[in-house]
Length: 357
Image 1: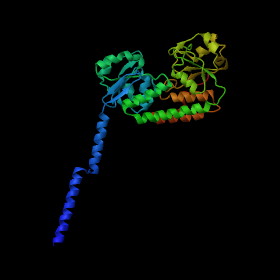
Image 2: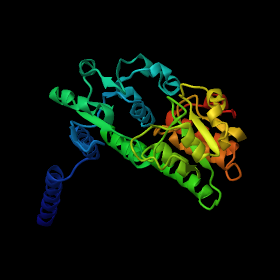
Image 3: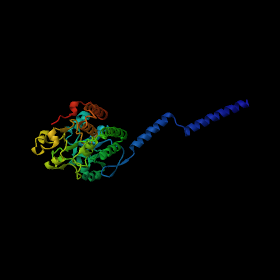
């Protein structure tokens, strides 16, 4: 009998100890899940600090959910990052952006608060954004926003390196680092493909890129367009220009460079016939050979430092070096790009692949 009582006491003591330890240190699966969710929520609400492309440290209360973008390049990037639903204001002339119509038509209904020339601080503030994104040229407006307690992110994606930094910056600001990494991985993969296709070619053609305002204006070595030509296996005849951005040149200078190819941006204020019929340029090899083209596309300008600029590199590669990269291959890559990052199906007609002048 005594042995039986001892056994009962031992059993009850063990059970009590298990209960106590479970109550103090053990956690049920439900409790653990709830705590994890709480921790994740707290983490998402913690402030974040980034360094923008003006070198400024900017602190946000957390990943920005309400955004104003006063710059086409940053708006396009935000769409590619899946943040279009968070935009509450954008740049002017949005109705001219075919990409917006196809990938995010709701943006066309948003207030237009800025342009390359300025941004309306009062109208922007009324939208109560978590962050405002502006190009470097509008940096003078930063102080006005700071006085209102509105964080401003300055971007300046003018070179390949700066474009990649801009992707990382906006991904940090919006908490979409994984999507940003996916975009950059894709970008690097295609850039490396273009480089590998043309790296061993001894004959690299000379290229002249005509600006939008005048065909006697071109890019400098400081611009993304210069990088684009080099990555496609071409030689930019204007790479010797190092001061500033689009620069005006003379007809004599273009004759002296004598490029084998001329490309006019698709937002040009002139026609290819204007260029081709200019008697002062009749001696340029590209004009004489009929190698004067419009840089695509109808959806968006591929020479800009935007997510789609990877297509600009690939298209130029197939134009300059069709023996190593065909237009059929390019079309497949272009369709895959727009489906992957913008969830739209595009046709050859929409891409606006050009015909020679």
